Length: 216
Image (cartoon, rainbow, N blue to C red; front, side, top):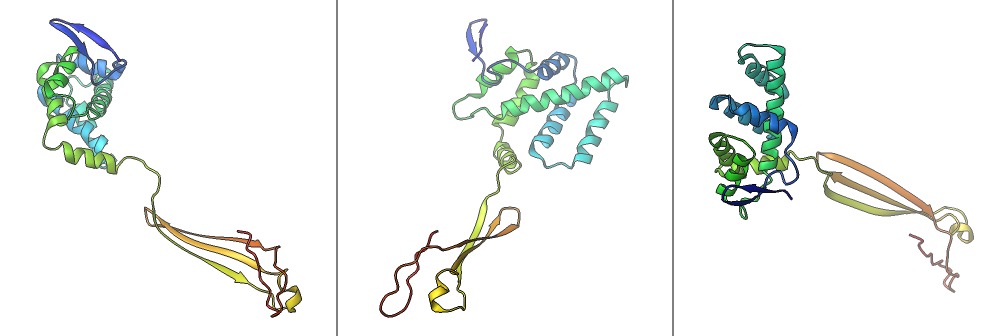
């Protein structure tokens, strides 16, 4: 965990506890000459990417429009805008991991301004983290997070197939078959069949009915 010495005391980083990513450093450096409208557009684009609620074509078109708004439109300016977009995504991803129960808003604001983000832009990030839309943002982030499939239902049965040969040979042909059908999240259904011969029997009782022992 990184501890920074700041005027008036010691500050503990709450967002980037190890080091600030290079794309975030680029964003912070550019933010000192950036319009507030442009920064808010970057936040909107970053949230759209993290939440997954925007189609890829629409996201790419919005980034292109933002790049075209730079004056003059040069290859270097477009590249810098793309890096700034990557920086806001990394910044928002880290900021949304902050526990709003144990971390006060002024602490987060101080952390953002301490690594160079202007206070007015830091306030916008704090509004995302502590604002009324945080619950909806968290729900969408969780729903779009990759996860293993979840079993939704399971049905199974054991079938026993017995040969029609003479009774004395019947126990050699006893065959157990386990049939299972289960469904997974995403409307995916699977069926499996596992079979195995049974090679153990009990001695025939006086009634003449064989008793078979299962080897499952």
